[in-house]
Amino acid sequence: MGTPPSVPASEKELLHFLWRVTSDTTEVFLLGSVHVARADLYPLDEVIEKSFEASEVLVTEVPMTPGAEEAAAQSLVQAALYPQGDALQQHISAKTLELLTAHLVQSGGNLAGLSRLRPWFVSIALTMGELAQLKYDPRAGIDQHFVRRAMKLEKETGALETIGEQVAIFANLSDALQELMLRQTLEELDELGPTMQTVFEAWLAGNADLLSETLMAGMKQPEYAELHRTMFLERNVRMADKIEAYLMGTKKHFVVVGSGHLIGEGGIVDLLQKAGHTPTQL
Picture 1 (tube, rainbow, N blue to C red):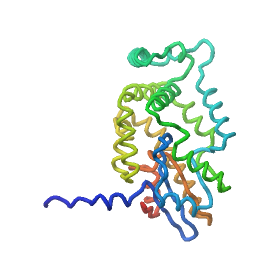
Picture 2 (cartoon, one colour):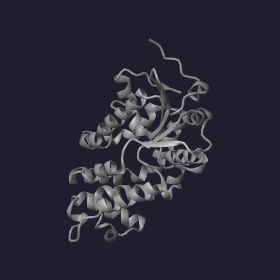
Picture 3 (tube, rainbow, N blue to C red):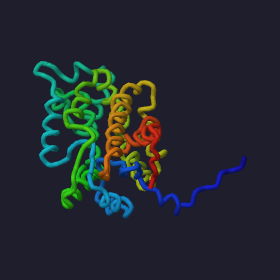
Picture 4 (spheres, helix red, strand yellow):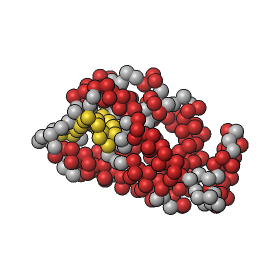
């Protein structure tokens, strides 16, 4: 059959991590977000910024006004705390506790400071701490960038999930799924730097296959199937339903959602295609 021709670099660079979906009445832009970034990611390509400017409504995963973010932080911490008399060590296996203790010894952390926190929150805290060490900042995240732009332009905003819905996703995880989440974090933390570099290379090139392989590789293991379903697949269905509702209206929406939700089988782009729409990558 021969070797397929390679795609010239100039053609690869024409793609962005941005899709356009149209209906008879409107259009929706879907931009994959990375929730932390570095300042040197900006300025974004003109195709992305012009698509945002042409839209009437900015939609993020959850409300991201200053008041909403403060409420979200308070809700997360409240949901993360075990009641008095309970502790993290009582809800994870000896193996996971060993991995956690080893990481804390290496990083100078303290197990006592985490003992009242549930595994899902410890997983997030460890990841964010490592990202901060690598100079990634939530304030430079792609969604935050467009929230600031929307405020400056006095653009209407919306969200795919409420704060309560997102907190409930974590709060309702079983002990087994929480431990899986924490163990996956501990096993992959040392590779976070190279992983993030690949993520941004794939994002900048609009390479959905590479980004899916990088972000979702762990989730494809059989033991993580339920966690993948809870954290991604079920939420993707609800998000795609909301986007379909936007397509039934007349306002142009610019949706910024975590890149992992857009890509792969069962991702939002895939679900919209199966529903009869034709998302076009720009």
